Length: 407
Image (cartoon, rainbow, N blue to C red; front, side, top):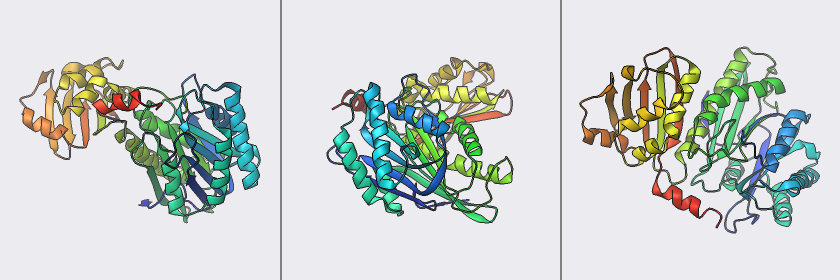
């Protein structure tokens, strides 16, 4: 299994495009297309927020009922959320317009949006954008990169990755892109993510793999504790690699799941580290928990804590912030039997054990916490379960960015 250059166009038969449509922005790419030359099986996970954007409702129906999909149209700038019937009609129109240009039924076209909630979509610009996307689509790495840039909102960098691996003697590729910087607190997936593979795999096994995977990847990140109305993760598989179709669990299924895990974990960490105003990727690793679920709850509680995030921003070795977050998580453990460590590229320091602070150097602890990636490790000594969660620090710029978001 090896990482290769590229993203959504790395797998055989996939094309993409990213263009300027002026949906909300006037100086950047803001519409993207992902297209497969062959029909795809599709799997998806979506926001748990009861307030679901129109594209989420459209895509959920297609993932559950459409016999195949072959394209995804995405816009940034406007979320098409809280837009009523007009928003759903827009999804229908987008799918029909793209279908006419690509020779597909509307039920084979997924749509996704991200941006400001409550604004209606500018249909004329959307239609012009779809026409430009259909004309611009290519199977090049640059086309995939353009698409990754076009789905960004407050992101500072595009996020994409591709892996190659072997299934039954055939080379298979899995690539992906995502966006997300704020309003990140997934509980089914994350802001927007699109994965493409040329693996042959049944719809049932594809959905099973994705649903299991997000529990330890996208569901383990948080930037600000806000679950978006638009969270969408889609996985398209066109089967063009020519491997024997995966229809049951077995060695090939496990290999595919491992590749999926590597791709989604990479993208999830990129998203957490690019949180709005962030200066550091903040990781919490919990070891020695009684159960896997306890480990997940504990790790997530620490990276979601505003006080913990502020301590990371200030490079402050205030270990009480992290212990407090563990304590109110809802998982049971013995505070007198916890070991707490800070780790980074600048070193590691054992800071708390057996119910008391250790004799550590504040200067050394600050140096460890001053790296661009910082890990808080908590060993509970209760069992063999572990989990890792990813977040970011909380800086002054987070408030500035979100105070001015609509403008």
